[in-house]
Length: 214
Image (cartoon, rainbow, N blue to C red; front, side):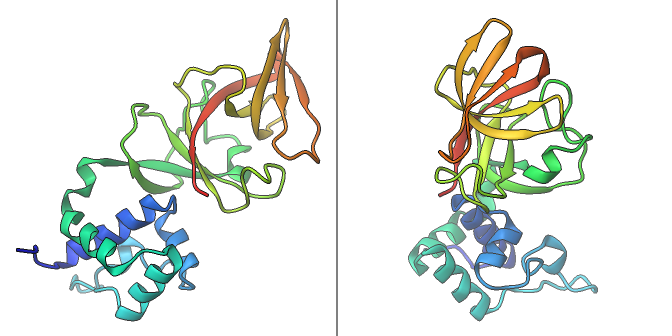
């Protein structure tokens, strides 16, 4: 017998659908043509504490925007309240923010808490985080609005796609080239941008890209 479609289950299903599509909850709302705050946790209850349910029109827009069928959504509702057992929340940081101080420590681990979070299927690295692409320097591999999941603890080999932060505050998505004595080669993903060779002393950290929404 199907489980009851409770308030908690329906909102959990929306959260999980966003995670499956590599979107933050506000990104899902934007994709559906809704106000970015429509699905925020603060909007899920009235000021008096009464449950506020998502409207049928909003749900219809979400399904259309994500390409999900009603059967997929109902499956997520069935599993909704247990979704957290298989996912965890990771910080979502914009590339413009990532270049500023206060978001990463010297090892490239996210610090602080002034960011949005997204749910993502559990991965081994507890320091993993998400970056939202902006601009065109990563095209055609990554486009503005794509979400990439980055692991500071993952091992890195030549050819891996990485995020690098340089001493002058740049945060770059590149492919790792050769590691020469005193210099590291970062290969551009967009052919319009040249390969960068960074002196090792000017490279603050490198982190491997594990996954990207497409």
